[in-house]
Length: 269
Length: 283
Image (cartoon, rainbow over all chains, first blue to last red; front, top):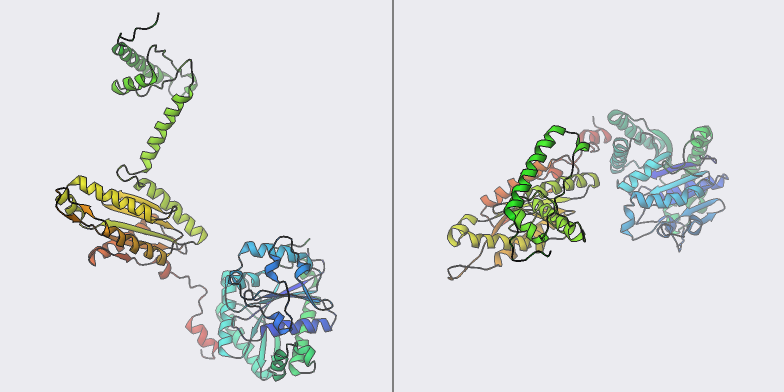
């Protein structure tokens, strides 16, 4: 079913601007640095920017993949060896709400190629649109990126609540981004976790945190991923340690991961 | 010997023979009860009568239950007439004879289907009920014939303004209705305002030749979006309530009912105030 034990993750946040896309991209780089292959999929449909952070402007994207005769290989953009990404479109409102038929076309084309990687990471858009929710429910794990700001806390709680009540999804990993200290990061996680336990009867798992780091701003401006631009930066080190946690999780749960389809409802051959 | 056209066909004899035969058959069929395998079909050959003549005889002598078919010759024209009769009857069961719009029976059937479709597909469905203003006085002042002309004219206008997949029906009297599948409130209101404006411009002549008059209309509108459970009866009641309001507010206008979909937004996923307070560190 999932011979390569590909672990699929959706990276989500509810609120926009919490650094989701930077986290996904640099996690990919960190995995690559440890010889772990991954495929990133920009699922911020309609307003994509994974490609922008990389300073590239790909000719083809998810939009083309919907057409007959275009295959995943035609659209995939190699970032490094064994580290590829699938760009999305910008400025196509029709794609923001991707219905089940479009998702079906897309994932049937993607699923077999995705099975060649160790990790498949979906960078979901902000908000609680049906597309975001249905994609989040497809993957094996969900990483909720949250910052210590109250607005981010509320929005991530809302997205968890909707997924739990409407899609029966109960397992979430939390990554605290832009934390000024370990103490602040832990308080943020504890607050969110306590609310989820109290009102939703869900226990969250703590994936760790990434320090607020001015170097990151500079790397975005230079359209160079942080791990490439400043591998010794504090935030870079944080991301590497989170990547290690994910690798360990995959090792520890090999059988469980291999026994499940990479994406629910889309069995690979 | 060729039949002399001058000799009158013995209608009386035939009619009484067929009536007797029918009685005998009825008596006989009582004996066999449910067991239709033992029933018989009886054919009576009638010479010298064309199918048109037969129809006239059947109508006059109350022999309509006898089906006629030619023995030699093409059965097709006869079956075709038979089919046309069935189609006419089917049309009559679903249409209002005066206006040609759907009748209440057809309306009920379609509304039930559209509510189900809306529920399944979560598509909007709007329902409008119309009542011509002060129609009794039109009948009293200008006569029933003129009244019928106003009703027909409104029906024609209703049909022309709406889309092919809308269903316009006459409820009876001066009451009409319109099912707008796929239309939300805003679209429906736009269409109805235009319809009302255009209809009241129409000039009806006074049958006494003295001047002209105009007729206005009041409308109750409701809309369903499939998010909550509702019956056809409840939806009609909502539109009816709105119609009542439109009349009470001075007629010649559209009023929108209480909306089930706005009243009942599902809130199982809502983040409540106490949850927010908890997140912000309160209790």
